Length: 364
Image: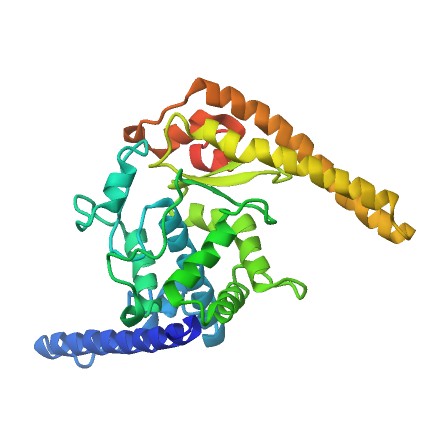
């Protein structure tokens, strides 16, 4: 199976050929009109590349003022960010790795397993431009000859539509670990590390600034925990389909919830499956750090552990406050009416959600 970098290079070659062909066709159309109306001395048939309206054309997508290298870097970074967005969609059950089209976009998680497991092709949904673009990226990057059959879905969705976004590994089903599973399912085990390296390097071309000390998976985790939701809000024009529940500034706990799978039990499950266990994990980590401070062999080592403990205690305080608010909201059993739109429904959760003002126009 080809590596992701090899697939990207092949896809880009196809894109360039498509752009060149489109430019040639448009210029030929111009020549025909110019000849038909005798405008040879007044108009030129030439069409600049930045006017070739294809999303795979960096000059059109970003404007023609950037250098060729800058355009290529931006496009590569955005392409891999789109791949991550598609992977999140597969985690949520919005998409399936082994089927085209929108799989689940109903309300309240109703009949999710039945609809998701149906062998029939999805019907009744018209893919929006964002879905089409994200799917086109995935189609271009995947090696179809090596793809599994429909009967062998290699990547299963999350069982509750709640995906933790954490800056370190606290849960086995967090977005970063599940994304690594997605890459393995799509491109195989053989090139797994090489593929993760390519993704991290690509994100580092524009989306984030890479750090010398971090692994590729660390870089991907940092993108997911710091930049993904900003990109998601921009892509969906401040009407997100994945909602970021956040404890606050310290990011003690954050998770994505797919609005079409949200139901009245989601907040209760979020609390029992993630927030309450994380409070216990923080407490255990604090005890370990306190012991390390007491047993430190130098002042520098003790100070390093004290700094970590102080940061952890801030997260503990924030998470405890978030837990109280989450319990109150869970007891209210908040429901959504998708006919009211994202703006109205997003406002029902107060400051449990991130970027409330950006989405609703009002402070939480």
